[in-house]
Each structure stands twice: as C-alpha cells, then as structure tokens.
Length: 130
Length: 394
Image (cartoon, rainbow over all chains, first blue to last red; front, side, top):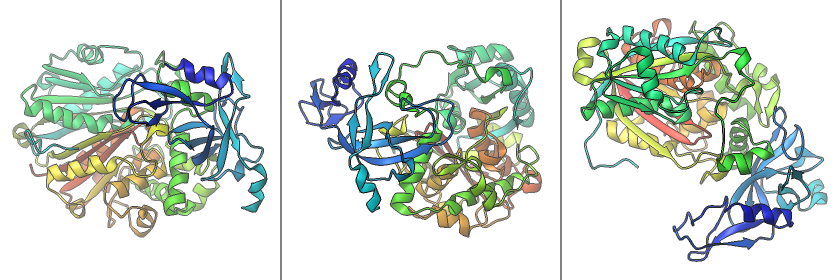
C-alpha cells in the first residue's frame, strides 16, 4: 500500500490517500480510512504545499537526515489537504525557520533507490521581512 | 475514557514493597535478568515477604528476550505464578504495571504481584541495536529525516507550546534546577551533590532547539521493582501501605507526527480518570511524582494533569517550592532529569518514590504528613499516559 507514495515521490509529486466515502485525506498510507473505516481509499496528487506546524533544529545527532548531517531542520508540516508529516526543511539559514512558514515540497533528494520528499521555504526572499 | 460500568479498583490493592538499584552511568558484568532479579529481591524483602509468596509477575519488554518474557523471568527467579504478563508502555510501564497488578489481584488471578523494570548499561553494548527489525510507519516515514529517538519530538512540542502559550528558557530551566535541588537530598541520584543554576542550564550546549543538554534526561543502568498485594494482606505487612485509589490510561499515537494535538496531551484523560476513580481532588495531593524525560514533559504534564491552568506551568514552577518541604513537593527523588533514567526503571522511579514517601520511608527527604500522591507515567513522545492516585488509606 505504500508503494504509490514512493512512486509519486520518484515522479516529483506528493501523494496522499483520500477516502472515497467521507472525503478525508490521510498520511501515512493504510488499507482503510482512519476517519470512517471505509476500505475505499484512493490515491490523489496534492499541490505539495503546507506550513510549518512545529519544528526543531537538530544541532547534535549521531544519525544524519536525508538532507545531510546536523545541523538540520526537522519539521512537522501541515499540508493544505490537512494531514501532517515529518520532513526536513532545507535552507541555508536554519535559524530563519518559523512556525507558520509556508513551505513547498521538493523531490531532488535520494537515498538508495528512494526519493524522499523534503520541503523548502515557499518565499525565500520574504524571510527578510520578519 | 474510564468506564462507570464494572467494578472499581479503588482501594483493592497496595504497593507494599519497593526495591531499587541506584542509577549508574555504566554497569559492569550485569545481565538484564540478573539486574531485574536483584531489584526484585530488594522489593520482596522490603515487603517482608519471600519469593514463595509471589504468585504474579509483570515484566517489561526486554532487549534480548524476544518472546515469552514473563515466563523467562519467572523461571529465572524460580517463581511459580498464576498470573504473568508483559507491559509494553515505554516509560509509562511502571505506572501501568501497578493498576494491572491490582486488577489481577482484585479479580482473583493472583494475590501478590511482582512488577519489575530496568536494564544494565554496559559500555560495549551501546552500539548494538538489540531490537531487530522495525517495520513501523515511524521507521519508514520519520526516521530518514533524522527524526530518531525522542529529542526531536519533545523539542517540537516545546517550540509549538512557546508559540501558542509563551514559555521562556528560564521557566524551562527552572524545572531542571529545582529537581536538581531535590536530587541533592537523594544519595542514590546520579547527580547527588551537584547543584546547578539557571545559568548553568542556559549555558549548556544546545542539542535540539530550544532544548539544551541539562534539560534532557541522562541514560543510566539500574533496575526497580515493586510488590503489589491485596488490601487485606497489605495492612498486615506495613503500617502505611500505598493503596491504589485511582488509575487512568490513555493513548492516541506513538510518533509525535501523528498526535492529534502537539501541545494538549492526553495526560488530561488519564489524570481525570484516576482522580475520578479515587474521588480525590487535585488540591488534596501532597506529592506529584510526574514523568520528566525533558523539562517540557514535566511542564505539560503538570497542567494537563490539572495542577495549574493550561499555559501557566512555566509560571507555576517558578512560583512554587518543589522541594520535599515546599508548598508543592514534586519529584522529590530528583526526577529522572537528576536521578537518572535506567531504561524503563526511570519511569518506575516516579512510582517507587511515591510509594516510599507514602510508606514513610523516604528518610531525610520525607514529605511530612503525606497521605495522597499523584503519579504520572509517560511513554514515547507524550504517547502512552498512565496516571495513578495513591494513598495511605484504602
């Protein structure tokens, strides 16, 4: 059931499951809808946009992220469609990431066979206004 | 949600024995079953019992014991039991064992139950992952982004909490400082004799923004065990048994990514159920023994358990004396932040301290005239929650 997600990422699109009965979106993939229980869940392409719901800058870690070694930003991003996922926000200026920051998905990070969706600030230049 | 149907666990059983090995940065020559057995012997002795009196066991999931953990442990101690189970609630396992033991006793499945947690911490073992295959969503969708362990999750909670309610670095640091003061009254604490200041906390290295090193629990090796028995037997064994008066449990997620709400934890559901079963109000509690793997954990737990209003825990810890003689005694053993976290025995230390205080056996840090204590256990990233109300009268 997860293969559609990874195939989407490899093709440059962020996919979510949507319930054909109640209309809820969900992440991560399951064989049924966790809102209404229907097994009629279909894959949909999303716009790949969201906002940083919360985040941290990992300064010390023995485990690298797909975007590289520490320091890196781990963020829980709330997608426009509703579900949240954990990802990296890639930026040269980790200290400029903030809660509510609009971000958009990016598909140029591979590890092994898999493309891992990460996010970048939607308006990099707008940071100066803060 | 607690149910009003069915029988009530209130006053059916009590903690009568506590056994604990002091946390050590590293252990030498200890095995996981061996260290648990040593803590168990101390608990059984403290209860004035023999191993032959034990007819129930609750054990933790133990690395290196992939299945049949309860019978493996019973065999190791030569026990003959009528109730054997393992409790997989992470840091909430210790608290979760207490009501499960009481339920087994109240339903006649056993009479006296040993609850045990802990593991060694050998230098040589630290590089090995003893748990094997991980096929969870967390491993597939979170870990590749460096979202490993629990540091990142609690840091994300702290940042979101500050965004919604306001919380200063000094307020968070105050938790670490006041619990260190408490540890300085406990010779078994890993940081006994090492007081710290707010400045020390703020100048310790940033690990995961906004959490600094002195706000993060230190792993140790050690073990802790309890003996729980029926109310009737308890009275014959000790003058002041720690009766289980109320229990509540709640869980919605494992990984923070999938938590329904980042800043409103389900501690409220567990605590409400425990207080409701006990018929006790927050203001009657004389000791709060609450899980504190990070400073933010203790703060959120304090308010979601109802000891202060939502968003005010930062002011609460600054305004109150959290020492054993203070106006709000909290984590009098030092909390895990200053006592040490010996794997799941870290969570159990909040239960052992509450029981020890209620027994009147806390020595120099004894809370005077204590008759009711609140315990909270937390597993994962505010994932599994278990709340207990314990008291000296059934």
